[in-house]
Length: 251
Image 1 (cartoon, rainbow, N blue to C red):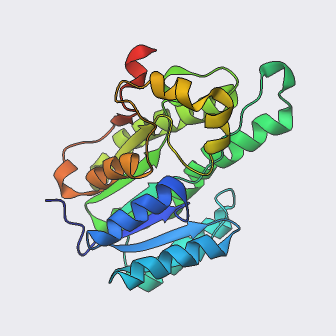
Image 2: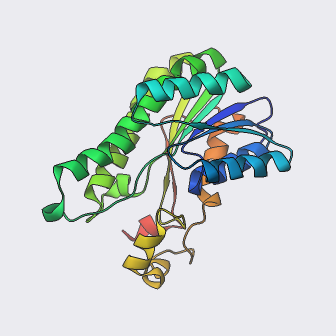
């Protein structure tokens, strides 16, 4: 059985969707959870209240992933509250699509700024604490789009592919410190961020393309992250776990 007791897990972008599901599961398994949110405190505080009501420990911290000063401050606040960070999850990001002919420079830059630069800033801010933990885990939520590409979502796919290469590079660089670095790549998942696109592409058509016969739930990729955060995955680094119901097998 997976046990996260005595571990402090920081979830960047943990107030909703897959991040929130990961926070709940981590707390249920005994972790002390710090989670960041960018601009909407209500969902974050509601989640913290739910975790505490169930007997867990959690704290919400406002942070902007594109700001080094903001993320450094958030990490300090998390450490001041719960001590050294044993595991970090980066799930903050945006999911927006445009055809190349309609894409602007500002659109491209915004996607890279939040999804890719935000990952770099978040990981760097947490690095000293992960090193201090001696045996720690870094989990980045990428996407199946980052593995195979995606028309309309080419900027998003590029940013997610960049996350995977960043993770693989960090796996090599940080192994000497006992830090494991891995990705989780969800396929279509029923979240607030993805619902509009699911409906636009056609819910039934998407379901028909998934061998396991349903769209993913936030808990599906969250469970993969929990595994990677745990000691059960102590010999896994530089890997990407695909959580898409088998859709990728069909291309």
